[in-house]
Amino acid sequence: MNKLLAATIAALLCAGTAFAQTAAPAPGAQPAVSAAAQAGASNCEAQAVGKNGKPLAGAAKAAFMKKCESGNGASASAACDAKAVGKNGKPLAGAAKTAFMKKCEADAAK
Image 1 (cartoon, rainbow, N blue to C red):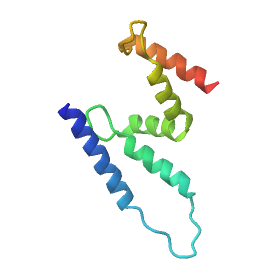
Image 2 (cartoon, one colour):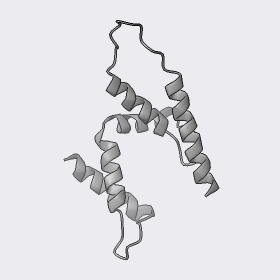
Image 3 (cartoon, rainbow, N blue to C red):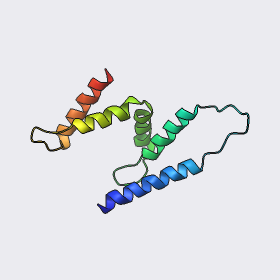
C-alpha cells in the first residue's frame, strides 16, 4: 500500500513539474505544435513511470511514449485490462493475462 501511495505521489509531482516548466509562447506567435498534441505528449510523459515508481528511460520510455501517443494504445489497454477476468471472477495474472491482453489489443486495433 505504501509503495502504491509513493508511486502515485511521485507521478503527481512529476506531472506538476512538467506543467510548471513549459514556457508560454510570445504574444502573436504561432505554436509549432497544437495545444492538444502538447497536452497529450505531456500526459504521456507524466504516465511514463515504471512499477518501482521511477521514471522510465531509454528504450522502455521510447516504447511507452510511442504506444501512449498512438492514442488507441491507452484506451484499448484500459478496456482490455477491465475485461481481463477469469471464469471464477478473479483478475487474470501472469501468462494468462499477457496472452489475453495481446489478443484483446490486437482485436481492438482492427
